[in-house]
Image 1 (tube, rainbow, N blue to C red):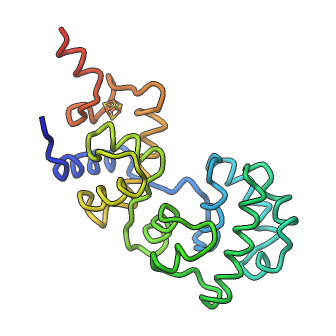
Image 2: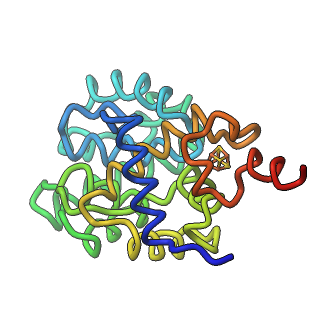
Length: 219
Ligand code: SF4
C-alpha cells in the first residue's frame, strides 16, 4: 500500500516536536558558526559527546579562525587525536580556516555553494550550518536520519544525497533543521539501530516497519 509521504512527514515532524520540544544540536558550539563548522568536521566517525570534550581544549588553544589557520597541522592533531581520523581532520581544519580567511574575509559563508567549497565540508555539514546558524533550513542526512526515514517509508533510498533531496520535498523548510535534530534523539531513545522499541513507539501507526503492527497482522 502506498503512503502519502508528505502527509506522513508532517505527522512525524509534529509528533517529534511534541516529544522533543528542545530539538537542540548535540554539538555545544556556543553560538559561534566557525566552532560549529570545526566540530562538525570532527564529528565524522566520532560521537558528539567526544567532540564536545575534545573541542573545549581545542578552542582554548585556538579561539578563532585566525589562530587555527596559523597553527601547524601537527599541533592541531595533538588536540583532536581521540576523535579518530585525526590526520585528515587536522589537515582539513587547517585548510578550511585558511580558505575562510582568504576567500570569505574570515567569516563562515552562508550558502551551500561556498560552504561545500571548504575543505572537509560536504552537503551534510553545509545543511547543518544553513539550518542551525543561518536559519535557512536544511536536511542533515546523517545515519539516524537515513535509517529512520527509511523505516518510516518517507524515503526509498539510503543514499545520502537522494535522502536529502527526497526529504527536502516533503518536510516543510521551517521544520527541517529541528526535524533532523529530533530524529537523532529519537534514534538514540526509541528507534535504535539494533533494537527499535516499536511496541512503545508513538509513530507506529504511520510506520510501515512497525513490528507491533506486523505481530498483530500475523495473529
Ligand atoms: S515503529 Fe519501530 S521501526 Fe517504526 S519508527 Fe517506531 S521504533 Fe522505528
